[in-house]
Length: 422
Image 1 (tube, rainbow, N blue to C red):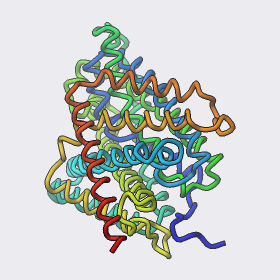
Image 2 (image 1 turned 180 degrees about the horizontal axis):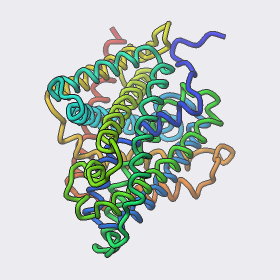
Image 3 (image 1 turned 120 degrees about the horizontal axis):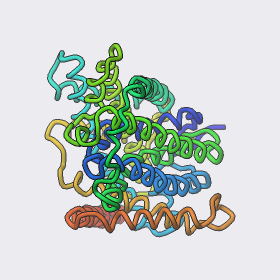
């Protein structure tokens, strides 16, 4: 049975989907953000980490419930259109594209830095550009090949982190966990808000839902397994990091896990952790290209972007236009530097995206609700609570970005309407 021209190929297994989720989560969060969280709340950031994981879990279940019933590319963009209004759907798609493109540029720059530390064979910027080009080319050969590469990358990252965990357990010094709550409940709450964003990569599974085998069964499983594995891994790594280095030393370092490795005596630990950091960033960048190109595909199919974004390569069943445009934009950002305005608003854009997810899950008919209304209500409350804690300049940046999106949509639809009348 042949596929329709605007349908993607279902080629991802359950393991592939889990790998893509983990590849999107295990990146800068575990290698950098844990140190920032340690400075905010001391050792008690472990509690913040657990709270963040639980809130991410509620949001993940809402995504799983929606993706099981509407297994199409675009994730929350598609749910917003189907269950809410076109403006809700567009808001989710625009926020996803703008924030993920800017973030991908930052990740690419960071990746060049990490690889340069291991193999100083070229400048950091050149390494970044080569990595973006190679990952873009891999994506052009279809989701299956990209999924296989992602599993390899994620496996290397997991092995390096497991090596760090088991190397560090004998070196844990319990006095480093005291005082456990030096900055009170407010410190824990702030660390939870920060760490929530480290978990949000699981939504990449929903964005790629159109390419997953047996989506009704595999997508909820993949999202739940991904979140559980991420929570356990983050907790284990964080306990070792605090026990070996201490929260104060973690907060003073831009690469706390490499500092932990330097304090250990296991053979090759520093090199292995550096490799893990490089593959983690590589995995995040690969998943960013996958997710962004599929969002462009979904928005092209619904008419919020030019129709050529919905075209699919006949041989590899990949949205080549979206992949190539994504690669070019990330290359440009890597060359000129990050868009600080968009990066600054990332916290707001992510919370808006997941708020729309939860609202859409609440609007589903009761026969489609796998987890009832309690889960999306708790997810929405968590998003709103964290949004309230954001600095006003972050909220204003996010509102400005969203307003720019609405202006773009208005002008694009106006131009398209005029061209159709000619």
